[in-house]
Amino acid sequence: MKIGTGVTVTVFLGGGRITAALVAGLRLAKYDRPILVHDRHPGKLRQLEKQYGVAVEPNLRRAVEQAGLLIIAVRPDSVSGLLKEIGKINRLLSAVSLAAGVPLAKLRARLGPSVQWARVMPSPACRTGRGLTALTFDRTFSRTARREVKDLFEKVGTVLEIPESKFDAFTVTYSSSHGYHALAMLAASAQRLGLSRKIALIAAAHALADGILSWREGGIPLDRLLREAATPGGIAATAMNAMDSSGYERIIQQGLQAGMARARKNAKWA
Image (tube, rainbow, N blue to C red; front, side, top):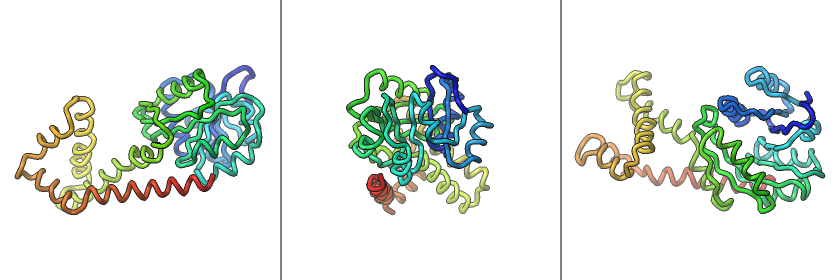
């Protein structure tokens, strides 16, 4: 499917979950630039076309030719093969990689010197407009192109520009999976105490989502809220102290360190 000439097109290479989440958020925000998606799986393209009204293009070369902004949205171990298949590009083009762990230095070596690269790490929560996105730009990225990329991701949530050296630490920390995982574990433990699944989930969600939202919107320091919620000698304080004594902080640190190691392996695939 070809979009009319002279129109600046945002092209996603990869039609997986993060593309679907971003497109959903952009549609919610009334993003008015044409969106085109390429994927080698026809079923993904049909679903995205039907659900979000995007243009689809099964041919990689034709998709890239239409791109004003090119977004690489494939798994880290697929980036190298995809860029090799694209080959050299001989026109000025902004390219954004969503591949966790793949550094700008390796991206810069692909597609040719006329392509300016950025790394972006968006949250799937962007589908509701409540996303959080980190971004970092290669030194060749123009000021105008930087504003264009920031504008795109600001439509689906908060944007933070951080040094590339901090990207892996951000990636292992910001994932909404931490919240979902904590919700599942807290609710499951409450069920073992006798609560129904429905009530356990409501209680656990309040403890996590509503409490954290109160912190974000209330402007009250976190340590003060902890003291307020966990009275010394009370039930909440007793539960919290038992978690700490069991190695709660150590377990979280181990998880983040494992994620950092995974990011370093991703860099080797590129």
